[in-house]
Structures are given as C-alpha cells and as structure tokens.
Image (tube, rainbow, N blue to C red; front, side):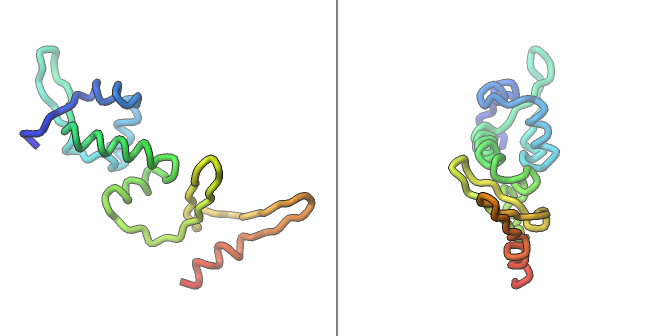
Length: 129
C-alpha cells in the first residue's frame, strides 16, 4: 500500500458528499477496512488518508448498494461472505428493496375490498429448502 496514491479524508468526504459520521459508521460495520485508515503527519497536524483507488471503488459500491441492503448485509457481501438466508425482493418502478424472510411479519395483498394474506405462501417456501 506504500506505493499507492493516497486521498485525504477531507477530499474523500467532499468528493462523495458523505459525512464524517457515515464514514466512521462504515468503518465500524466493516465496510471499509481498518487498515485503509492511514494516519500521517502533515504541516497542519495529523491527517487521515486512504489508498485512493481502493477507497473510491468501495465508497461507490457502498453508495450504490445501501438502498438495497442493510449495512451489515452489504458488509458481508463486500467481504465475499455468502448469506444462506432466504430473502424477499420487492421490485417496483422506484427500485428494489430486499428483506430477509426471517424479518418479515406479514405479507398482505389488497385490491379494492379483497384482502389476501400471502405470508404463509411466501415464508413457507423457506421450509422447502
């Protein structure tokens, strides 16, 4: 990592419009590895830098994936860990939203006065595995 081009924390936050808090939340969740946070002395004091190519790619992956997955699930995906849990994906004109079946309480379909409880039909699929 010594020969890689570095980007300062300040420049990274400004480039992607992310907050200091978000960056450190991502660090706590394991989305950005601890060893990518490089402390260096500068004329104005200590500053944090990152390997530019790696951190830019990771931040872009986080920003594009955070609307589809919870941060913990996104961290697992970025670390290459397979998730063996069933998920329910709702695809709409506004995008996709993914839920773990273990988190689903009820699935109700409505059309006019007709109401159908589809919970067992969907969550029962995980038992067939």
